[in-house]
Image 1 (cartoon, helix red, strand yellow):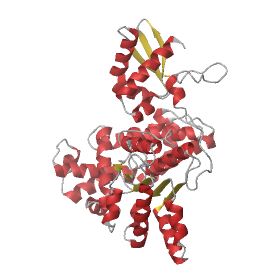
Image 2 (tube, rainbow, N blue to C red):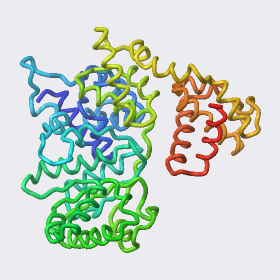
Image 3 (cartoon, rainbow, N blue to C red):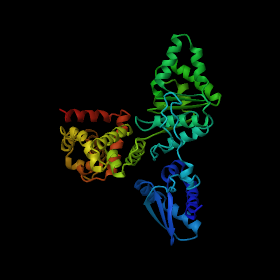
Image 4 (cartoon, rainbow, N blue to C red):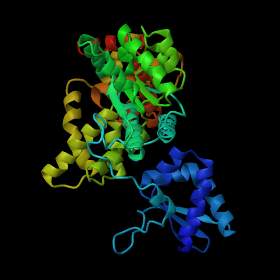
Length: 449
């Protein structure tokens, strides 16, 4: 093994001891020590975004590991570069250690009803907003029925709950293809229970669910108020737990907030591990765009991914925006560049902008709360001003499709991270149907006449 690879393997082993599996997988995949001469270590990563994150979060730890291994005072430089391959086009399975150890397995096709084979752990973008849910899901797939049972994942629409549920199913199937794995939505579970009762065939239905090795039910909140369905699920739940089987559930809210849910069932749900997934931040949406682009065989740049991330309200809209850009490039025969991306999204953005302007949103918001536009754009941070300012940010984003930078400029030159935080704050309150939704509705009514 070349000395550079041996050195980098040591660094990876040391880093792995100091960070989570999710962070290690996300940030150090396909990194390598490009060269090491005169105490200068050049470390290569597959994208500028990964380079930036490594510099900000792990530069000290990397240097410490390099110094310890080489017995030298090393200087580190990061570059964007792919993992080296041999001339014959095949990478040696033994080098580099990390890249070969996490090479994604080919997805199974049509192996599990209702489970998407492309929803795997390997292509799930991880950040602080979903890291706990990601690691917990991996742990469950590795230790079925013995860790976190049940696993209850909750969060708003479009944050990746279903992706993680499918990833668990895919991973467990890969390891135990002979085992019985059932994935379905709460609506489908309800329909099966109702049909069994109607056809006087509850014995068959009970045998189907209670013999599962892994039972996964998506959107479990929709069983609220359905007493017969809850009763069946309660008994199935107990039998599966006693048999050492695994249960995974997802919802848009935690167990205690699901109304008309029997206390004994709510207690069972909360008896394992309950984890939430927050709406994706700007960096995570950018990473998701890059992953989805590779799925379509497109190697788009980080600048293009940022443009799409800024214009997406949630993760479900990301793929639609990406396909819009890919289609535009295929139609015109051009490369995918920031200019093309803006042009592809321009029609969508301009259509919304043609009727309403940023000044309109600011004026209506100020009128609604009885404040001046100079206060809204100013530096003061009284609670009432901050809330009105965040609502203005949210409306500028959702009504006009302005980028974070554009919104910051409109509101007195604020940084895009401040805007991102403000928009995210209001999105969470809207998702929870907080009273603030009434304010937003009132402002929109005034805005649209």
